[in-house]
Image (cartoon, rainbow, N blue to C red):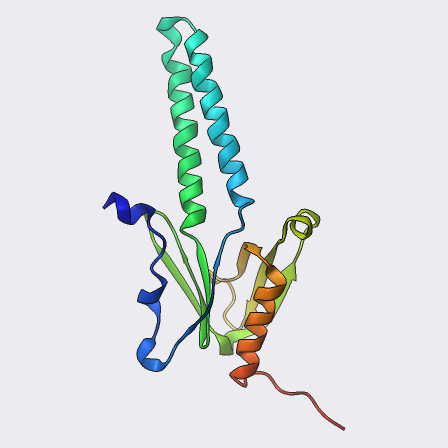
Length: 173
């Protein structure tokens, strides 16, 4: 049970293999997501060490705070590691959640527009954020944050859409 909690999401379970669905790319979060969790864990360790220098009768307060901070940091890291975005030849979908698993799916035919945002820090470190506009607004795939190598991922989606013949070729004169 505990091993399944820490395991990578099982992407293959959600494929429509009998319909000919193939994985084009599996996108995990960029490593920068883990920095905040690491800083929280470090703060928890500092509080734990400081509890050694507090009177014994009051040491339980920083001890509990330190343990809670470390547990929260572990949860955040698990949350990021369980979040993956999958591009297939038929659709895009996202698996997320640690305790409560979520699956959000969007067929390629529903993708109207993709916005790629690359903040300054993202350009320097190699990540960006996708915003999908679709016929059905407010779904679990609206925004995918901290995508590593966003330009390559954007081109992969555009290639899949073009191969499926879902976009017009444009007019030739």
